[in-house]
Image 1 (tube, rainbow, N blue to C red):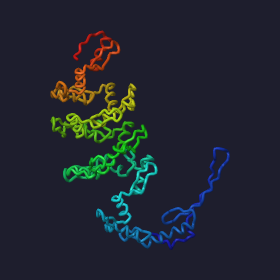
Image 2 (cartoon, rainbow, N blue to C red):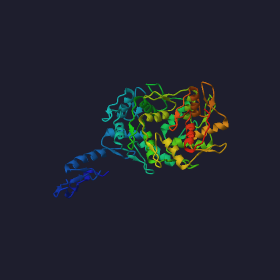
Image 3 (cartoon, rainbow, N blue to C red):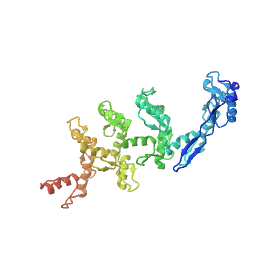
Image 4 (cartoon, helix red, strand yellow):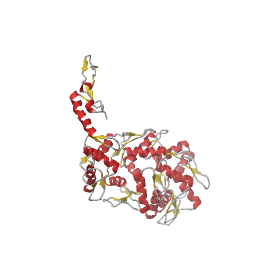
Length: 462
């Protein structure tokens, strides 16, 4: 470091800014006087007066007295030097009496103690949420301001947290530096590895005090609690839709942008999320590792198996608070709720038809393109939707999973069972607006309408 005592006060550098002239909206001109600026030759910090520079140099004089012998870094006080040297020697003299965790600095211990006491002295002036650390409050405020200071230089995507950017970059590089020694599986993030390890020992440390449900990590518990409070702090600035987690917002925005960053190297198909890509890849291998213990049916992912099991036990855990109708999946409930509002956010750019969800829009688009991406590996017949393919495959397997509890008759498709039940009730909900004739199936009504348009007579089974 340059010796402060050797510096001549008269050598203080002055930045003499010239007067600037600013024209207003009128004819007059305003002269703005710029105050001379003085700066320190050592650290280049700028001051408004020479006296402030002289006073500031005292800091550098103190710095010369306290320097680290290992890395030669300078400090203004002995206490700060002592605190710094603990980085090199690993000393952590401040110990928590409750859990035994140690810290290199007493202030860090004070912050840690709030974990045990529950104290959260820093509150957000916008939403009232409280935090144990001021830095966490600063990061939280970005939710309200929309600030995302961390940018990916490859694809341009921005993030609220630096750790999310670091994790995102590994998506481009393919790096998975965190390794599970039990099953050799690799992960892009250490928290993902920690949660994965708990699966081996079936440990779920984080429990919801409202419903008792347990989770592998605290972040999932925090998101889960919002299902009880109804809080959705993350908002899409394009359509205004709100979400319980920031990752859901980023994923949702790809619907608006059309961005599908996850590519299948086998067939080239693109996906909005990495989980969808992983599920898709299994379609190439034919692997279905998740088996139903009741009927033996297999699925490519665990969530599909859980939904399937509900068809055996009749469980419908998702209820509409407006009409109290219940559904097997949360997505079915979301789609149903839109029927109350009449809102259809997803529009076909070809014909202008609107839909309540994106999957219905994608299926509809295939009526324009004629695309039938789902093929039967037995007979080669192709279908526009995976649901149609699954129903068709039951012709080959003979499977009829849908049973009528009145007469015991079984069907390949749930829609066939619903239509069959009408034969017991005598209900015919589909009416011809031309002649008034009624039918128990919509496809029967469509075929009937040909009589009026073409003059053909058609027989029906009811």
